[in-house]
Image (tube, rainbow, N blue to C red; front, side, top):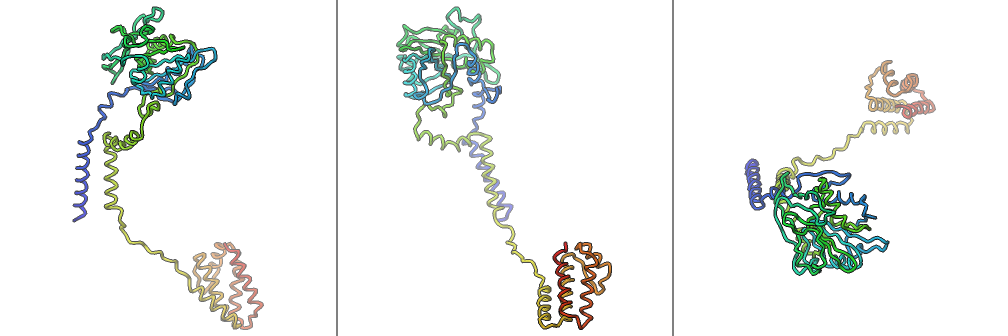
Length: 426
């Protein structure tokens, strides 16, 4: 099979796999967009989206009824307690949806029984919390694009109800608003209705005593989100709602910045649930259009690389050792032989050749039979040895070759001059 045929087969298989995965795992991007807020505002170092409570938390730091504001984290049984400092302790839990463990519910109940005040605003709480106070699940749903909020007490009542809305693509959408059915409460004779939706005159903000403290339940947490804090009427509503709480030390539950079921530490989850979340990672990638195509592109690239580029295209090039100048070794060997025999006339020829070869190899200056003035100047320039010393060495070589009575002492003197040249040349 030719190379072109292989490429065509691989490309066709990749397209086929991508098409199958596209229809098996359709993109859910379009469905998710409608559930996400369209705008964001950056406050200091944190992004405060329309569903967070970051702004309210920071406004409370300067609220006159807040003596101190402390953030507490899970588990509640270790961090939630009544302070005995002359001021009551107020616990805040605000979130869209909460699933509290039985230990967390018991801790909150005991906190209020011992004199604490608990302000809990949530559109959905699990049944084990409401079982303490209601015969049946008390939250009822009303769907509409607007949910006007106000108060019963004339001192708190707003001149105009706060028209709370939830937006999707800058348009108010039909939303499942919650209100309380007070007649289901065990404490219905003690329940105080504080806030209402003027649409149906249904209570959305109630309080009732338990032991030495009070519970404050608010069914519309959206009224305290960042989106409401950018509305002047929304700020007035939040301030009026919180004015029902006593002045004291406030404990802000860190869990309630924004609801995330995967980070709900008050909800008991077993190991199987955690494993299922891990196993669904690939499914999440495949259900997201952008991630799915990126994943397929990576797989196809790796496959094509392994098929065509991973094999060696050229044989290993062997290491070639550099050539050795054997002629210099031969000259040195022969010259040492003549030196031992006392044949200075023959030795000096090889010694001179060795010296000239050194200059040739080091400075790339070829020599001729006539070592003229130009040659001497060039050697002196590159070696930075004076011309006089170079001339003295060359004259010594010439005299040794022409004078048969050239003594050993004079040979040693010449040798010292040559060695001095080797040591000082650049």
